[in-house]
Length: 385
Image (tube, rainbow, N blue to C red):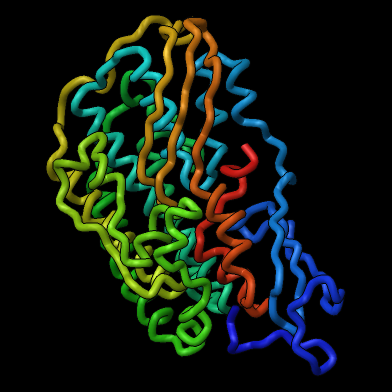
């Protein structure tokens, strides 16, 4: 409990839900962007939360079941939509799981291009997130800056893949194409602007007394909660634990890139925001390294049989990657037919946006509910999939 704001009803402190001396209110399921279509059922005493129940069920997309009725190549338009702000992680994992069951090794150049695609996706996702985090505490300026600049990153995706949101660039066997002429020069210009904007965001956000007073001490994730609630990604790194699949279980070409795991120790909303801000700079650095080191020629994909009638050998596999929210995994089962027998998606939002949020919300002022929720970086389609 947070003793800073003891729950008060009619001048008396109330924690006992059986007494019925509390009020019930709902937050959502309006679509505030970062947190999507989900609702919080809040029991409040005064202006303090004493119980929180999360409610999903407003999407009903059924991604996993849909994939059982589609050929492998037809699943790509589906997996992209499991996480709209960062679809490329789903593309990569579905392709990687399919390739592992097929026993296919993709070309070296394709590995570099996939890594480039993933880091661009991280940067775009974080630009959306940091705008939401700042906006939750009343800083509309940062929200307008970051959401607007995200469009410049989407311009790069449009040139590279032909699409701005759902790219479907990473296909089984490799990628759909190389870098178009002039793309690197355009990317360098966008990255320079992103670095400058992040410096501006730092001063407007982390030097802001309102943000500091509201974010510090809010939603502290203590070390004992990490494994208990399956906490991963920046949420765990904000509590001082250096876990990152790009280092711990390297995939693609991450073992050839120079970067450190960014951590903070306070475990609160402020620390998680700072970790993600650092990781945005980290993604810029990684993109620059990839552009400099990647092969400029070579095959882009391994030739496969007709993908419209691709039969994947019977078997099962689990592949994982580090998304902006932490470990993202795909468990895929094949029965040897043209259709996946089973695909189960492990999205970080399932643990962060439900059990962990319900635990951390107790004792929080209702005005800070949205700020807490966004600090955990939740995308509801990963929950109701």
